Image (cartoon, rainbow, N blue to C red; front, side, top):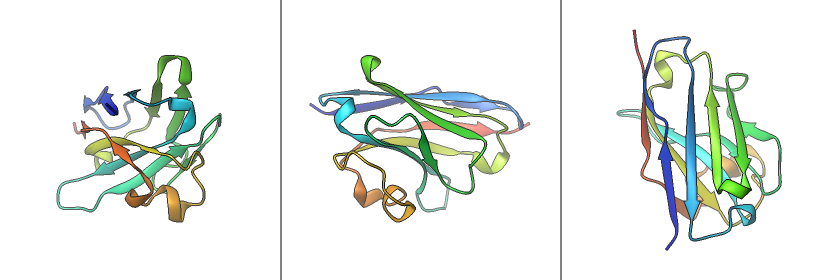
Length: 129
């Protein structure tokens, strides 16, 4: 059974940091590209980052570039999203998702939810003073 389980969300003050984790099971992490999405109340789901199979660098939406870093540890079946300099507008439920395409491609692909086959349940991130 394929599962993606996010953790690491919480309440943080503006300017603070969080590290989200996405633990996968039921498939080989190294065979998949993994993306992170977020959805704020009343807004559409937004793709924020993606890391390709075997890649050590990620792709980022302009809204988060320079503040978020995606990484993967295939031995631990885990993808991380380090979030720094958080802003109130980063408040959302964050989801990780797996794509069998292996590579993220351009933003027209990695920010598109339909690119991904499997999804986690999400973890809440709240940035507030």
